Structure formats: C-alpha cells, structure tokens
Length: 195
Image (tube, rainbow, N blue to C red; front, side, top):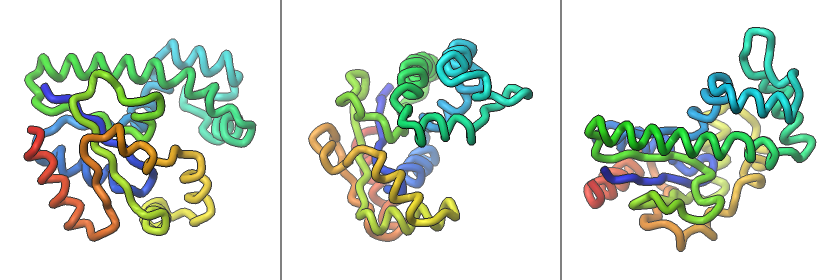
C-alpha cells in the first residue's frame, strides 16, 4: 500500500484535491474531521481535555463545547496544550486505521492534514503532496466556502505555518492559483505517477 500525505494551508485546495483522489480509488482520511470525532469518542482524549481545560469543555449530552474550548485554546494562547493532547492520539489512531486499510486491500491511503509537516516529514509516508496558493486567493476561497469574513480567515492563516517554507519536505508541489478544472487535472496527473 502506498501512503501519501496531503497538506497545505487553509483555502489551498486540499479537500478538492483529495475528493478527486477518492474518486480515483484512494482512501482519504481527513485529519481534522477524525480529530473532532475522537474528541467525543476517545475516552483517554476526553479525560485529558477535561483535566486540562475543565469539565465545561463538554456539554451535558457529551458533545464538545466548541465555543468554550475555542476561547480557552485560542484566546488564552493554549493551542499547544490542546494539540499536545489531541495530536499523539490522533496520529496513533491514523496509523492503526492505515494498517487496517492495508489488510482490506486498499492501494493508496491518504492522510489529509494541515499539521502534517509540523515536526518534519513523517517517516511512514511514501509521498508528500503540498498545495500552495496565493494568500489573496486562499482568503477569497475560504470566505466563499465558510461564509465568513476575511479578517477571521487572515487570523487562521496567521496561525498556520508558512507552507512555502515546507517545499523541501514535499515530493509534489501543486501551485493552485488557477481554476477548479486545472486543480483536478493536476490531481489526476499526480495520482497516475504514484498509484
């Protein structure tokens, strides 16, 4: 099985790129969605979040109190504390899922994550695809997609790594400043090269 990491900043086109790969037969794990799932299902993670940020982190029905946790993490500068709880469990579960998918006969397993190269290139990946786009383009796409304002998107970009500095850790760099059709063609081309 070929293991691939797909990364890039907000609005760079990661999801569109990965959706195309899913159509082509890859199994794609979206790390953000999986982390959100684990935050309400993994007992170890739930317990650590409550211990670190307080019981208010969860509502009475067991769902995540996103507003409270976002305030605690982002407004009080405690993002690293939250990441230190979530990321180790997340990566461990992704590796377990990857092994399971290999047994099921999946040929291409994709980890889609903005935080993929945070501590260097993961050793267990065969390829890394990095999507880059101009900041203006990323802001415009995200504002349209999330129906949010550009200031909030700029804040999120500011809190993400500078992905142009990560080029040396990637096998494929996709410059995504063009149309949706152009991105899909690039996705197909890269898939053919690795699959």
